[in-house]
Length: 265
Image (cartoon, rainbow, N blue to C red; front, top):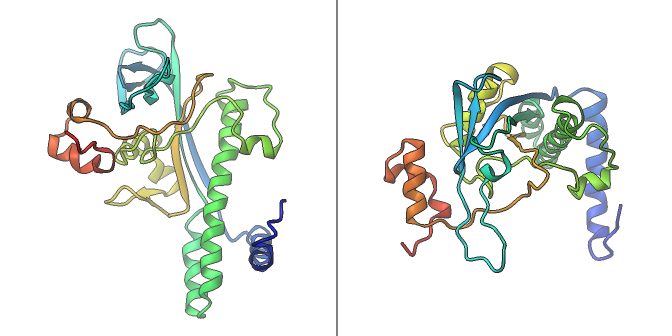
């Protein structure tokens, strides 16, 4: 652990309190984390990922919709879409895609409310922060298991914790609603594929947020060249293409993609 000379004095009590609460969370089993993972036959179709019903690849179970970067590039730098990291449907490669939802569990809500009833807002906030970090750590651990065991495309992978944090392993786990796949509604497809509400009691709200809040979801892409990226701003032509692929009106697409629309027209 590194100590920042400017902030160490103020941060040390918070750090110690967090470690003490973490010991209690673990020792007294305050949380009941759960995870659901799926791996499916898949191929790319343009900027979308086709998810097949089974290994015969004759029936389409779902489509995961991607957006492509449209910023001007120098040299040979490409404009990415998540579909670039799955083998195209006409290339003859039987590829796969994965998905996951993990949660620290709903227990944090009741425990946080107990702290609040005791006028201990500090402990309530600290508990929620730790629940968020535990969910992220759980997502990291499940990704490791997918790479080495469940999907098994990197069975000999050996990284210490610091190397894991540097994300030097093969594969990524982009999340709907985040820079590489900024459409939050794609969580609906992911949750249906995984049957997340029935499997681990994680549901989506009307605004496509996850409940319990200390939950993480995303895709697994295993391509050796897969990397994180941000779609950035998209123009009218891609908005129209995306609306058609999603079966939306232009107005619906504008509503759901408002944060990434290029206002220049």
